[in-house]
Length: 111
Image 1 (cartoon, helix red, strand yellow):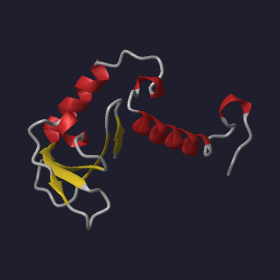
Image 2 (image 1 turned 120 degrees about the vertical axis):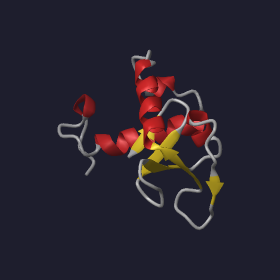
Image 3 (image 1 turned 180 degrees about the horizontal axis):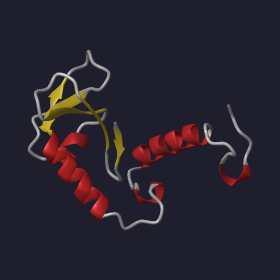
């Protein structure tokens, strides 16, 4: 599962973890710690996501619940202040718009 927050991007999977745990992965240093400050983050250049941490599933669920409860913006992309992250999310938005029919705003389908 990809999780896109206003200040970080995470991938959560069940891989190399125990019962009741999930593997949280990130591409940028600090993203995991932003959501899970006590996480023991490892770094491995031989994997697709450079940063990873095994975290209890209940902690992940609670964090997501808290983030949803805190939504106060009318437009997600506008809530992202980090320019690099914003631009990456815009690329994802555009890619997903390409699979919508009809396309957003009456545009021409790209695919």
